[in-house]
Amino acid sequence: MIVSAVPRGAGAQQAPGQAAETLRAALVDAQLQLIDDPLAAQGSLQEAANLYNTALAPSLSLAAPESDERVRQGLDMAAKAVAVKDAPAFAAARAQVWTAVLDGSYRTVQSAIAAG
Image 1 (cartoon, rainbow, N blue to C red):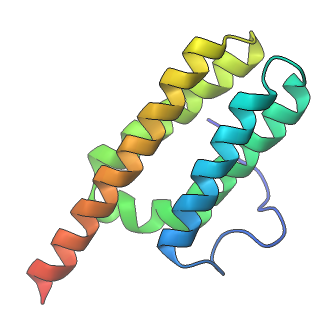
Image 2 (image 1 turned 90 degrees about the vertical axis):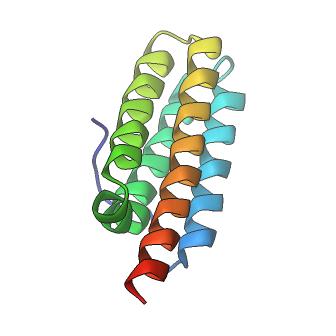
């Protein structure tokens, strides 16, 4: 699991939608950096993981624990892909993370509506 300090300007200060978009952008950056600059890719992936853990995981883990688990698995898969510079595996992991965030967001909204 990827866990560390929160980067400047990330996390709790952002609205959930903005945090999700920042996470998505960090994952895209990591994918683009993977072949030419794996260290930068690792940093972008770490930024995405930190953002998820601070801004999105608290609500997703309660409202959509299955989605939360899929995000965490995808982040772990992405870290392994970065370690071996496996771009196709990273792309699959990125897709898993993003679709799980979308699903979890949908379930979070459904839960809020149901709760009134």
